[in-house]
Image 1 (tube, rainbow, N blue to C red):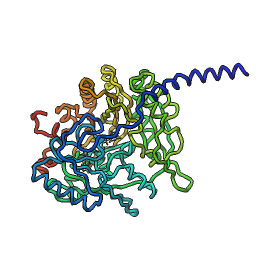
Image 2 (image 1 turned 45 degrees about the horizontal axis):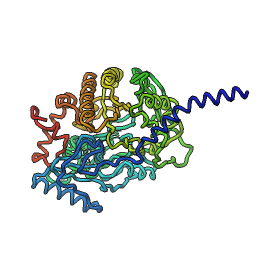
Image 3 (image 1 turned 90 degrees about the horizontal axis):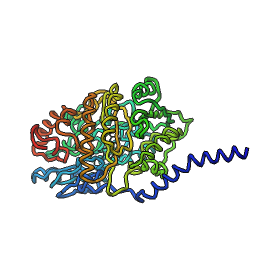
Image 4 (image 1 turned 30 degrees about the vertical axis):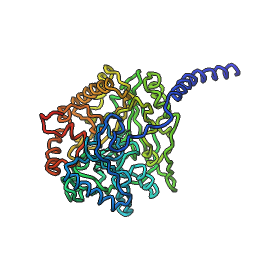
Length: 493
Ligand SMILES: Cc1cc2nc3c(=O)[nH]c(=O)nc-3n(C[C@H](O)[C@H](O)[C@H](O)COP(=O)(O)OP(=O)(O)OC[C@H]3O[C@@H](n4cnc5c(N)ncnc54)[C@H](O)[C@@H]3O)c2cc1C
């Protein structure tokens, strides 16, 4: 018995000691504090879009006064021929909130909220962060219908990229919008919905701030349910089939997402489908946990940087315990996690996101092509998440023309020209892979796509920019995304 006990202790020691030493090393080299997102007008979260802004406009605390300020700013910028860029939380990564030599309107603090309980419609200021919206709704037993997988974005920024997240059975956030108020390029305040200013509704949602300033929006919200997570490991080529079997008709699924293995063994070939099934609580309120950083989870995640062992450790742990450990968790608790819990704290490097959308039946094909590209370039790929998005019938510049899987990649890169050139060339090959599968790439990230790739991905952009010239002939609303892709075809980028 004693020998068996000793052998067991030895075996456990042999299993636990190497990761413990590894994670201690990661802890020692990890920065003590999160790097703040650069201030409005200076840069964005990528720290690779420096802006030479003439002026940053902060809004008054009083919402009525702030609204007058926005209208006056737009009118005067139009007269002075000064371009206006709009800044939310600056988590877009390609200068979308910056316009060189122009004015940056900082929407932070424009965050008034109200709820019509009878219709379950939330009216919310465009500068509100989801981290403010979620606790507000939680107190009323409700939750956001569609948002990103993290909470540190503004409502205005989310509407302007037309975000999506772990919601498995819906189109992007635009589908949850009843209406919004917009300050147009002429300084008028108009209401846009599916029956009023219909064209502006479909242009400003997913419109990257190029059609006006969204003041506030009326969003449909949903009950805050309790979920239990279940994880299924499958070959990536079977993800589509398994995902649809697990989320099909009649199943009470609240959220769902996938992870793809980025470790050496089975690179991009194995995946985990995580399903968050609704559980009926036996009465009583659904518990809500304020976001709390989990130091061990962070170390396991950051330990992947530059380390094949770290990537393999994370994959093994994720398969073993899943993300939520299988316990009960509320929708609001899941949605309320800030992205900076896992973000890089290295001042000389950054994490960049990319996302490719492919028709559901082409997911295996895309992953196979992407695998070959990634094996050739060997970037420091930290994470691949899969999301499902239903067809978007609301916006012009749409990324989901039909039901798609979004393949989200998080890559670590140095902040230098060589790393940026390498990332540009990798990104272009991945975009080609998505195009070959009938897909496209997501626009809020680094602007590495060539103009040809942009047009091939978004043929609707011809209409989008033609209408931009009609609604905003003086070019009041501008940003680096518009400067790069909005010129007439043939113009230099
Ligand atoms: C770590 C991380 C995780 C992410 N996860 C997801 C995800 O799960 N799903 C997803 O879809 N996206 C995701 N994104 C992308 C994210 O949704 C976008 O970058 C989004 O724009 C962030 O909101 P923001 O407030 O930071 O917007 P900003 O970056 O500040 O602005 C984005 C665009 O919206 C415009 N804009 C902002 N406010 C207004 C307004 N009031 N009126 C008009 N235009 C406005 C800006 O001019 C700009 O063009 C992620 C990004 C990061 C960095």
